[in-house]
Length: 231
Image (cartoon, one colour):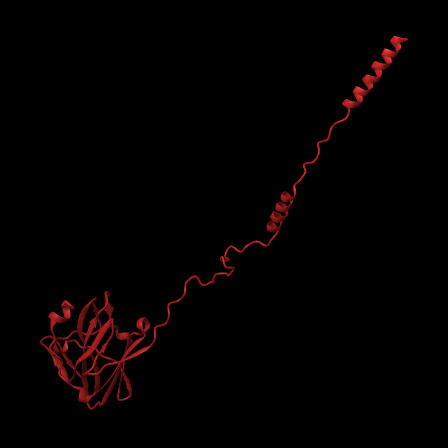
């Protein structure tokens, strides 16, 4: 009888042991604190916001599409040159040193002779270049009218009074003397001259109106002054 009870006890204990081994314990899910939850909400809010424009500045404004601005157009300036008063600014000085008529200009090598009823009208200029770069006095920017009619400058084989043509490079920080010549009616009354070679860079246009009263022999050409520059 005792053996039977012991056997029943062992069988019952074995059944309970097998039932316990068949269950798997499921770990509790980690609890999330209130502060962790708030951080998660804030992070999700930031991630769901609209993407920031890479070109947007710190103050929220977008930079201009213009990478570089074009230089300002120089203010127009109309300089006037007379035989008594030249034009001068920080970059240049231009003055008239003579105005003379020639029927012909003759040397041992060449003879320049005006057409019938006409004369050569030669304007002598002195230019001072005050910049650190050479400048070019360009014939393409020169225009003239004689008694209201457009007229083109002409070319001479000779150098009147020893002056070279004005249409040349003018060295930096130097003086240069040169001439311009037109073939005009022998009884001309007035010539209007305009030079726009500095208009695009400085807005400068030089103008001069001359009459027969302004005729005068030019000052003597001095290579020491005009070729060696500003001392």
